[in-house]
Image (cartoon, rainbow, N blue to C red; front, top):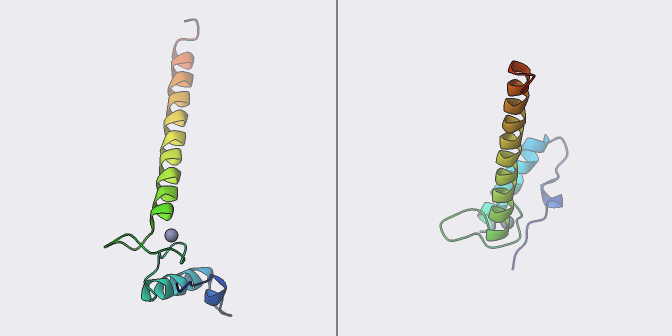
Length: 85
Ligand SMILES: [Zn+2]
């Protein structure tokens, strides 16, 4: 199995965005996941199952954070509008 390491993408004088782009290009050319560069991607896609699961987890927790923040805000607004209730 061919693996692309992140160190291979570390070329001098490149911004981190350029390094990341180069890393993804190499991983894609090697037929590997563009996130980790280790596993085989799912058929027809460019990322592997563990990377997709991790990304979903980040999205869910971000949504949860926003929801909690909204709930907190609405509670504070109710209290301000009717302080004796
Ligand atoms: Zn991956």
